[in-house]
Image 1: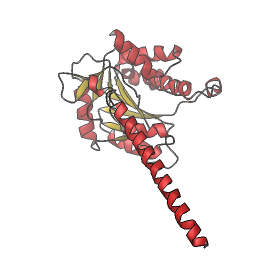
Image 2: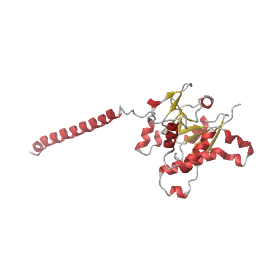
Image 3: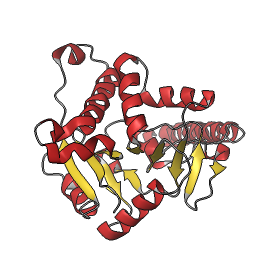
Length: 256
């Protein structure tokens, strides 16, 4: 019998009354999951930095540390936590599968895929999809530059390695992952299409809306996007000029 998969729902991004946590608990309610909600307490010295990146890194560090030991400190029956893969999923997530049985089957397939991957991303955004490499398993691609920690399935050794990274890192965790992938130290796969997405109804800033884009715009297309922006500005300017000319033409007649 395969060991349980720990699912840690990382609290802190939803509002009071939002259904996200309950919805996630339902999707991950199969007997093959041990699902917990975790709300880390941020130390005052971390809060005092007013650095969103530092605070987020600490939240992830705390969640992974909880996943490593959890209740096994007090309950020896929970010793399996130490050797179990763990999915850290942010509470701002929405699932593209609603069946607990289907979700369990997909997650077990990933774990048993034999890809020798250290972590599996169930969600990506602005990823370099043009650099994906096929794996032997349908729906899994090797990624070279992950950009989100929205929902990641860690194998135990990389749960521990990531804890070590976060103890001393001063940059976003995904940047650390990209460096390690570039060195060949880390192998990460991305699920395609996403099993998990960020819920845009929780967006509070412009950058949040970019999370709807699974893939980054390739460099060769970026100038075209900028050109479209310039053309839009040009036509707006032309429209305003025409409107002013029409107003200047008719205003003297109206006064006379």
